[in-house]
Each structure stands twice: as C-alpha cells, then as structure tokens.
Length: 395
Image (tube, rainbow, N blue to C red; front, side, top):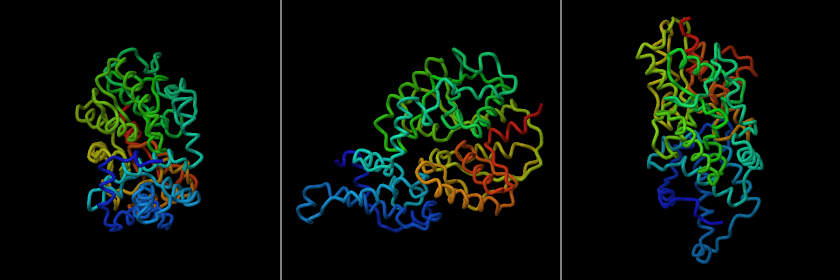
C-alpha cells in the first residue's frame, strides 16, 4: 500500500480543504440516508489519516498507526456508497477536484484490498465479456430488431461517416433499449450516414473507473478507438453521458465526438427532423455526467422547446445544481436501497413542478427513475430526449 494512486495536485488539494461542509449540504447520499459518514468532509478526514499513516515520518513523530481491518472496511463502505454525481465539486469554494479524488480513492482501496465484493463481479464481467453485465457481446446490437423498417445490414456497415456508440446499459436492458431504437430511427429518417460497432464495441470504461479498476481501462479505450477508425468515421455520437464523458476526458483525441442531444439540435436546426405538436407539460433532468460533467445544458432544452405545443417547466434545482437521480457511481450495485431513496427525492421534486413527464438525456437516469415510479405506481412519464423527439416525429 502506498500513496501512488494520487497525483501531486490531489495531494496538494487535500490540504486546501477548509471543512466548510458546503459539499455535505448538497450530497444526495447524505440527504437521503441522513448519515454524516457518507459526506465528503468525513471521507476527506479519513483519507488524510490513511495517507499520513503510511508516511514513516508521521508514524515516528506522532505515533500514528495504520487503520485496523475493521476500520478499513467501514471506511471503504462509505467511499463506495456515493453516486459520483460531482455536486460536491461543483460547490467547493476552493476548487478541489473532488470527483477525480474519489475515483483515485476507490483505486487506492482496490489496491489496498478493501473494497466491496461486487467489484470482483464487475472486473470478471468486463474481463470475460467486455461489458459490465456478462452478456454475450455479440448481442450488443440485438435491439435493432425493434427498429421500425430496419435495414438488412442492421446499421452495421463497413464504412460510415458517423459511429453511434450505444453503451452497455442501452445495449442490454430492455427498458433502456428504447433509447437506441429511437435514436436509430431519427438518424435514419434524417439521412445520417451512421453505423454501429456491434460486437466490436466494448465497455467505454466508466464502470472500471467507478469501481477502482483503473488498471483495466487502457486496452478497452485503445480497442474502441481503433474500431471507430476502422469504420472511417469522422464522428462518434453517444446517447450515454458517461460514455461521452469518458471519451471527452480519458480517450486520446483524434475524432470528433458529440452527445445525442447536440446532434438532435443540429438536425432540428437544419430542418431534417419534421416535428408535430405534442400537448404535454414536461420538465428536464440534467444528468450528472452530461450537465456538471460535460457542461451540456442548452442543447436538450433547445430540442424540447423546438417541439410545437410543449409546455416546459424547470426543476427547482437545475443545470449545474441539478440533483442526482441515484443511478450513478455503481451505487445501485452497492446499495440498492440508498439508490432508491435518492430516486424518491428526485421524483418528489419533479412532481412539485406539476409536469406530466420528465425528460432526461441518459439511459441510466431513465432506468432509475422509471423503476422507482413503476414500483410506487406514480403516474409520471419518464423518457429520454431521443424518445421525446421520436414521439414528435411526423409520419
């Protein structure tokens, strides 16, 4: 065990923490659980203790001892019960890159062998199947069968101008598969020359970083980048904000990338998407990785407003202050109950607007919020921006 999992910048930033607790006030895990141990200040205090306990000088001068096995396990539990929503980083008055720090901390805990057992399942699934769910990777594009009038090639071409990178959740979960179906139909209707990677698409790497499996990431990134290049594509499109953010922040540059909401807005502006009126009141939920992560706020709202007849209302907390839905950071795997409690707070806020539907731009947000509304029989429609546009498409 050592401190090599942290950058010099991170080690310096830790000392800048003033313990102001602004981060704790906006943490969805703390608000839902009422547990102070899930807060960033608690996590930061424990991290400093760990780092100093490993340093020989501190051990000699202060008589510090390393954490006991029970303390390690208890601390690790608090670290992984986090959605990695980044709201703590958003409000930090001294600008500490807290989300990056939490990812490094998870990597450290993995190397220190104190991590949830389910991390082994994630690692094995990715290593064996190249997706986080241990599904047959040859079935990544099976959702195309649900596309109306899908072509014989199933949108898997040898060459194309655009690659649509689907992502693991949208490829395999029936509820989330409605999103790639909708986007494929819109792109096809708009005469966009696009292709899927099919079985050549591997996990983008986000579940690895969230699980502390950073050492696994590079081969996946290299494979995906090469698969896109072999299609001769100039651009890659992502409906999944986490895939999009991974390519923005962790993949080598060399190809243009865009989120689906940005592509939809461009198509609407070019009059390539004929839209009919929809008589519905909607609100919009900013996905954490797309909003706070990639700063994409306007494109999805512009798409919504471009549909005739729609009434749009904002959430009390929106844009960079939007509250997480509870589906990020692998939390659902680690603590399904806490994930559901966070989802409840989100749905309650949505219902307060009087909206008939909530629109988002993330398959995981759709899955998390839909699961909660169905289980609790709440009459609220949950849909992705792609599904909304498909709903408004003129025949």
